[in-house]
Image (cartoon, rainbow, N blue to C red; front, side, top):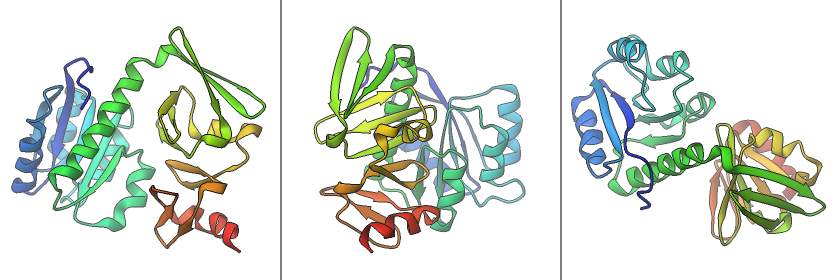
Length: 239
């Protein structure tokens, strides 16, 4: 894992089950660039902490007594990143509507937690370098500038796009690029008319779609989540 991040990404953990809180704490010990600002057994205590001391990252259970994790997140949407950890997969749509960076189902394995932390690392690296990103479009090409380097990427080669709040990750078979614009804005560009949105956080190039089921869109060697709100649009590709 790349450890170029500046130390001090602060996080808060809220879960009414002690064993689940301790599991997150134990997992985070592997990642020294993340510091734990507080752990709480309910969202009300967490809210009081956040009113006094904001953090960069939230790890929230959803189904907690009183104030639940989704309600807590809705009060602190200015916190850059939030990962929901829950036993109930049906909350996924609501979680991503609340700008979740990731959504983990209990019990969480070490491998799955590591994948979530990689997303955290990538997200904050993009934020650190945001002022360096520029992009421009021309015919079937996007030019991506990072610092003094300028890369030419053929739109036909892009597999999919992933939203990261105010940024969008452009994924090709060989590399990922980041541009400082939202996924929605990018899809409004005429040059991206060959892409179709399949989820709040993802859009795919139509000709790379191989198959789909009720919850997943499959590209060549990649599977991506399919949001209920976008299911009808992508099913038209196969009709």
